Length: 341
Ligand code: SF4
Image (cartoon, rainbow, N blue to C red; front, side, top):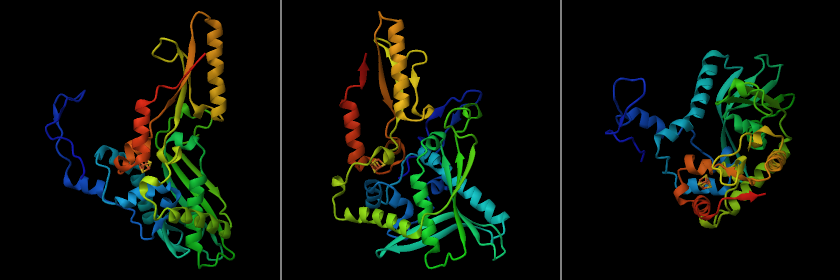
């Protein structure tokens, strides 16, 4: 059940002379938050196959569970809203011979049904002799997600759509491209000079699809991975990895022994460097230089990790998941990771 704010809660909002009383959410808001736009018809959806088997399996075991905090749901709906806005706009304003939105794909791999939904199919021209089509996926990412440069999953996703859409149709004499339309939801102009930061709040990429046989091989591998666990108890599934749980190194921070805060200029974020190794090297350089300049003090650095964000904030089955529950126990019991000079 959705957890509604307590109607008795009183909030004193700055710049408002009145005291506001927060009422329970109206029914239509609850309906919107609980509505599941993306219903899977195949045994697996293309996006489920890209996820970690544990995360997909646990959600399938508990299909009735939803996030119970409406504020988190509302945040997750940002992406849904961006999709809905663009799909509605394009459907209303563009020639349907050139633009189609939310196109369902359905195909079989080794007799297993796979389904998916293509955000946009764009034909360059209504002239049938100009056979140029782009299969486009819309993403609503943070700048951090962009800077990770991890496009493997979206490339696989688009290739799967291409495979499903053109299966049984002859792509003969037909030029197909794959496109990615990325909205950067936390984009700041002031940060756009930073290395790897997206130069614009809206990014568009195009690339060529992989050969059909290669795509089929990749999807078959993923399906096999999921099917191999079919009869395994969910507690015996392998732990979900950092990618699936959205766990990441936030920064290395340099401290003076006895200090509570990182020293000035002592915070090093991986997104500001080409690689984690470079970031670590810069941290060590700062620590060593500071140590040299202040021999009477002692300095060290430590890794500051963000929590498993997906598990903590966006996963309705987190209470039943050993990966997450064990990690909570470990982080409670483990001493802070420090590297003394
Ligand atoms: S809690 Fe985390 S690891 Fe477990 S199913 Fe949810 S997202 Fe996956």
